[in-house]
Structures are given as C-alpha cells and as structure tokens.
Image 1 (cartoon, helix red, strand yellow):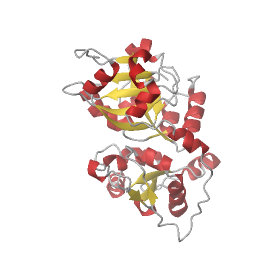
Image 2 (cartoon, rainbow, N blue to C red):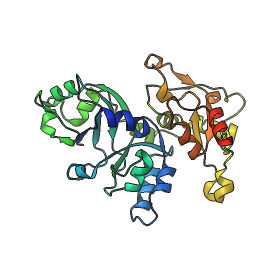
Image 3 (cartoon, rainbow, N blue to C red):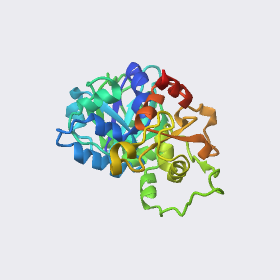
Image 4 (cartoon, helix red, strand yellow):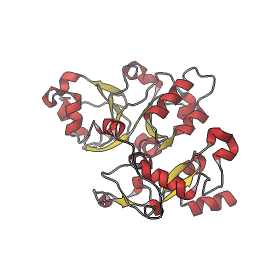
Length: 308
C-alpha cells in the first residue's frame, strides 16, 4: 500500500468535493458518459459493479499534468484529499482506491465536474477524517515551509516508519481497513420484509458522508424500500423495466429524505437511526438532480420542476 495526497485547494474543493467526494454517484452515469468506442469501458463497468455492489461510489479526478505521479497509483493505495493548506489546513477526506483504470476519461470528467480537466479518475468509498495540513506535515516529516501548490504527491514509505507503515498510519487516523473484507465475508442475511419489519430501524454505526455509504452498509433497508415502493421513480414515474425490458428489471435507486451527508455534526454518533419511512425510490436522473442543490431538493420540489 502506498500513500498519496492531492492538494486540491479551497476553491476547487468547495466546488467539487460535494459533487463526488461527499455525494454518491451511480454507476449508470459512467455507463451513459463513457463512449462505447472506448476499449476500457466494458472492463471498467464490470469492475465497478463488482467492487460497488450497491451501485454507488465516490470518485476523484486529477489533471493530465499529474500523469507522471498518478500512473503509480494502484488499487489498494490510499489518497488524502486536501481542501486547503491555509492556516492549519484541512484534510477532510481519505479514499482507498478500489477501481482505477489508467486511461484519460474526459467525457466522464465533464459529466462529473462540468469540465474535461480531470481525466484520470479513481473510485473509492469516502472516509471522512479530521486531519490538519500542519499535523500531516509533522507526521511525515515535511519541512514546515513546504507547499504542495496544487500537485499530487506520493509519500515515501520511510517517512511513515514511526507509524510502522502506511496501514498503521491510516489506523492512527481512525481508518478501519478491514471493513470491506468484513462486508465481503459476511453471511447472507435472513431478513424478510413483512408487516412486522417494515418499521424496523437500521442503525448507522458511524458518521458517513453520503447516502451511498449508508445504503451500502444497510442492504436490507434497500430491499425493504424496493419491496414497499416498487421500482418506479417516485418523482417522475420512470420505470427501467418498462423502458429497457429485462435489462432494467428491478433497477431503481434509494434516496434518504434527510440526506446523511447534510446532517449537522452534533447529530452524528452511534445512535443515529433510520427506518423505511425515511426512504424513497428514484431513477438515476431524478436522484442526481435532487442532489445538485445543497440542501438537497425535496421530492415535491423536484416534481414541481418536472411539471413546470
């Protein structure tokens, strides 16, 4: 495992972190955005579906100018995303790379961030962390005057010897690196939806920054929502099965009426709960439109826009 960091900068982070670092993205967007002519498309989609069975992911992209560094990034490596180095600085997000095909994806960059400037895109599940730039420099032994100036860097492994390596350092930051293995090895649930269980509460064990993370950790809630509400979008009425036939059978996305990524800090502890009453189902387009505003639009507000 290697450790990388990207000095995004306050302006870019404020604009783009909410889009893909702290919001869920549907695999369907990749399918729609990457041209069919691209040789890597089929392999990319297969890998995304295997690594993100919930259908959602977080991602980040870097400019072509960072190619010489980013080409060394591999699945399993860690990326710290720096919001600002001003003052004490702020590093709010960590991602363990789960998918990275080293091709420039300009069209996907446009779909995600509105411009083609960030074509080298890697996919992960965001871990919210509390780390300052000043503390990080101290941890890795950088000079106090060092400025990353918007670049991507790889941290030499010997700089983390005091922590016994990258994985131990991530543990020091609060990252529990075995959680994906635990999910992979977990036994199938015996959960069945019925009248007695539709109000069952599902506990969110730790502060997560996006709905994608929540529904990934609570697959039974997703099943219950689809059983109760069906697979027709509750905003626009779109049905994937009717449009795409068997290919679209059962496909629909879950939306939390109180998006977890927007809850205030004081609400987050181990007692945070939700139930099926807090969930609705939406098509990918409506789901993405709802999250284009912060705070997110309500379904009623989106319906009004559609009807206008």
